[in-house]
Length: 113
Picture (cartoon, rainbow, N blue to C red):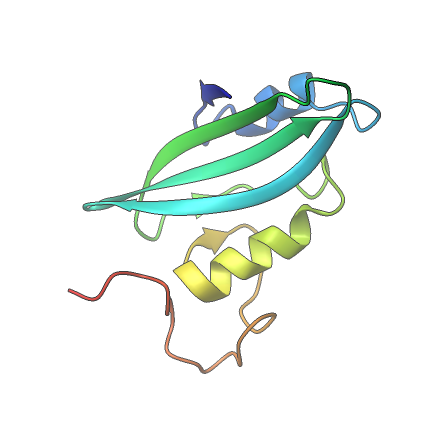
């Protein structure tokens, strides 16, 4: 797996330079608690053998807004909505209420302190 560090400021440019819908499948978006910060990850898989996986990642402060990549990867809205509900990630133009009811206790997959 290739792991490529990005930043919130360069994320969209980095992904737009990489992503080719004829060559890459957007697999999932993930978040990992790293103490006071969160590592946000975007996973892609090559269609061609040997089907290499590429992960773009960045560290964010809790509450920091992550840019949406829906304008680059049409199907990303599902992964973005899941992280908003399940990990309480703030994703640009993404409301709560896709996976869980909007008034549900936020971030049920976050570690309990």
